[in-house]
Structure formats: structure tokens, C-alpha cells
Length: 421
Ligand code: GLY
Image (cartoon, rainbow, N blue to C red):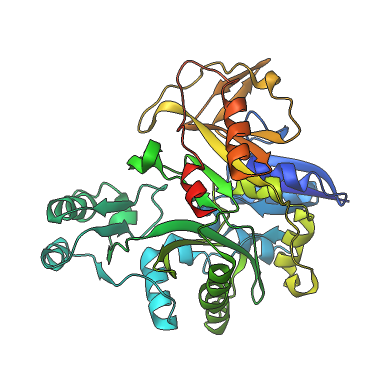
């Protein structure tokens, strides 16, 4: 039996820990720092790599890294140098997410389909470039910007203002000191995530996120307001194409360039006229995509993550998935993604007693007997159903039972998937 240390505090990490705990090979699951829904919490933040290493040594842990920040700081490199077992990509490999410029150039030199783009660190040159473009365009800060570094510009005015924010006012700090300007491909977005070990890539179940804060995909971008799995946007034919022309090409090109990628490779895909284009890579599981994907996974997650870290995925069978659909509705604090209140008491959690529903915690904390809000995205109510429609209805039935003063959620999670059944 092994202990597992899950690094991070979001809904994704709660779902990963919940699934790892189901393995008959796993003893304890620790969360660093965890949240109000995770049990064995240890007060170490994801970027305190030395402290995490000491904990992993003391408790003989296999470590699973949820968020991007510690990956980009080299947590996997440091653990590996110290002969500690850890799941995730190295610092160099996680550049697929931590540098948008690096990722775009990587795709360009390896023939991976993505939108045409320009790279700038000079505001005047960037402003000159956007004069002659067809709109909309997307302007991206090169570095990690907590999900806020991507601005969709509908016209030249928006583009000039985004350039000013990033290159003149430095609103994104060093993350925005270089930018990518790319054509916005008009299509349908979906998430394709594969588990990789440096040379083999096993597909996870497909999913679709809901990034905007308001119903019908209106309002500003968020970390994700809900997701469902599987998605009909990615048909079997399209999945095979993405697997071959994007995922396997990415993995073999990374290997050839001497930067083998181990971990979850997340490709944000735009589908236009049946053709997939990479919008962005993430070097980790999606949040909230992870929640419905974990609800549907029948295989032992620990076995797969261990095999990924050891380069042995080829020896494992395909992952087995429940036939049901899973829908995750994110309950947020009103005001998110800008400012929002904290420390509000959540009630009704005890009323969710359906075996096909899990409430994954994110921005929560336990205080005495109470669970309080502690972040923008607070809970991910995730339900299975025999169809997408029934999964939506099951999830919203539970959503209605949970209350706090400033609860907010979208009421249309999964609805856009109904058109693809
Ligand atoms: N749901 C989008 C992300 O994890 O970045």
C-alpha cells in the first residue's frame, strides 16, 4: 500500500484525491493544502516545493500535482532528482502551458494545426500589426496569468486596449511582457485530455467546459463554470484525428526535441468544419473537466498515474469508462471572476445523499462544524445520468439543495451538448 499526496486545493484536486482513494493499492490520501471537502489536509502551499518534498519523504508518498504553477516552478524535476515518485511533466515540458509563445512556435515547427499568429514585446509593433487584421483576434499574455491572460478582441479598439494593458501598463506583470496575437478561429470548443508517459498517450474521456460566467456563453472568461463528459462535439472520427494529428504528434515531437512529456496533456480544441485546431495546451488536468471525467472513470487511477510516471503506459489496457454522462455544475460566489465575498456559511450539503452525485469542493474551508466559502469557485456538483439530459437534471436537483447567501451558478451547463447527441 502507498500513500498519495495531492498538491493543490481546487475541485480538480478533490476529484483526483477522491478517485485515488478508491484504489486498493492506496492507503492514505493527503491534500496540500486541500479544502473544506478534503480530509487529510496538510498546511503546505503548492509552491513550497521543499516542504512538500520533506512531507513526501516522511510519509512515503506518491505525489500527484494538480495545478500548473508548481509544475512551471520545477516540482517534478526536484522530486525526481531526489528519487521521489511524482506524477506530472517537468518544468521544460510544462512550457507547453507556461509559455504561450513557446507552445505556438512548437506547434508551428511540428506541423500541429493552430491559428496563424504573431509574437511581440514592443507595443508599437504590435499596434501596427493589428491594423490590418481581420477580426476577431485573440491576444494572449505569454506567461501564466491565473486564467486571465487571454483577451478576445472583437475589433481594432479592443486589440489596441489589450496591447496597452499587457505591454504598456504591465497589468499582467512579467507574464504579459511578451504577447501572442492570433486569429480567432470560429468554431466549437471542446477539451481533449490524454494521459502520457513520454512516448505513449492514452485518451481520457472527452469533455466540454463552459468558460464564460453567464448563461449562453456571455460575459467574461472564468476558470470554468461547469463541464460534462463525454461530449458529442468530439465524434469517434474526430477523436481519432485529434489523437493522431495532435496528441501523438505532440508527444513524439516533444520526445524528439529531448523534452519527453509525462502527465496529463490537455489540448483545448476548436473544431471548425470538422477539423481540429489547438487553441491552447495545458500541462495538467482541466478544472472543472476533471470532476465529470473522474466520476466516469472505472479503472484504477493510481495504476495509470504511476505507470505514466514510470514510462510504462504501453503495458496497461485502455481506460474503462462508465457509459453514463456526467455533468458538473460549478457553484461560485456572486461577483466571481472579479471580487466576491468569503466566509459565508454553506448549508444543505448533508442533503446530497445520492450515490450518483458527488459534491467536489474548491473554494471552501471547514471551521468547526461549518463549511464556509473561501474562494470564487466554491463547489462542483457532479452527477451521473443515463443521458446528458438526465445528468443535467440530476445535477441541478442537487444544486437546488445547497444554499448560501451569495451563491451563483449558470443554469445552462450541458445544454449546448444536447445539439450534438
Ligand atoms: N477548464 C479549463 C482549464 O482547466 O484551464
